Length: 108
Image: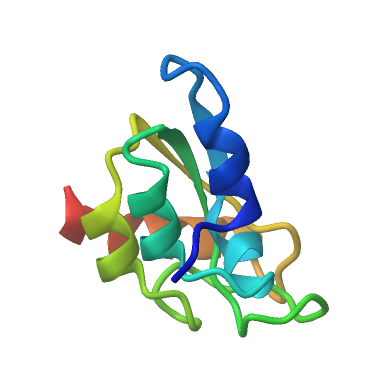
């Protein structure tokens, strides 16, 4: 896979410049998030974690209940922090956040 435009741009910045990556929207845009993280070589210090059906319009769901490959994403990540985020959600958003937190416990 050729470097994405984001990664090509990142290569032109000082190595101490870090990035905050929204994994869901990168996936929706067609990126392989694990490959993107590999290309950023540890410079994605903050990861926004969302899950859903991979489309622009559908509501988000708790992590692990949609299409995102979190085992691969988190396995490739060297992020300093994970940010659970739901832009919109059908049902109780706090319940979805609680399920997401429980899902992430398997990765720490």
